Each structure stands twice: as structure tokens, then as C-alpha cells.
Image 1 (cartoon, rainbow, N blue to C red):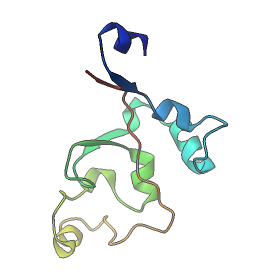
Image 2 (image 1 turned 135 degrees about the vertical axis):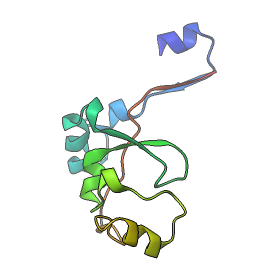
Image 3 (image 1 turned 90 degrees about the horizontal axis):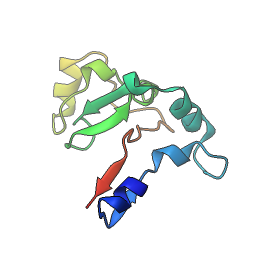
Length: 107
């Protein structure tokens, strides 16, 4: 945060670091996943939002998807399931999708 202020930024945030705190109301399984994950678990994908987004590999796997065979955003359901037999049509209830693993500075 000090660097952001020094650079003259009007806004800085770093939410992921605080998700695993005692005060956070995030699901304990999600907190455990964040703590256990490393930089090697970050997957950059457009599959969920259409924009390049950092997601955590364990979260994608927990949703029943194969992180190495994610469809591009906007592909039809039949195209997704025919191009990758690892992708399930609907993630299981309660599945949690990723978290940003980066700090962002906005000037």
C-alpha cells in the first residue's frame, strides 16, 4: 500500500491476502485452498468471464472441470462437451471459482 501511495495512486487493493483471516466470512474450505495454493496453481483463462482472469487450479478442479481443457468463453455447451470430455456441463453445487492471486494498483 505504501508503494501505491508513493506512486500517487488514488486507489489500491489487495483482497486475496485477507480472505484467509479469522475475520473473513469465506468458506473454510476456500480459505484452506488459498493457503495451500502456490503461484504454480494460478491459471490464466478466459473461460469464465471472457476476459483474461487468474483462477486457482484447485478451485477449477473442485468445480468438476479440467483446468488444462477449459473451453473459450462463448462456446456452445455442445461444442464444449464434444471438444473436451473432461468438462462437465454444470459444476457441483457450492463450487467456488478462483481468486485473483495478484495485487493491483490503480493510478
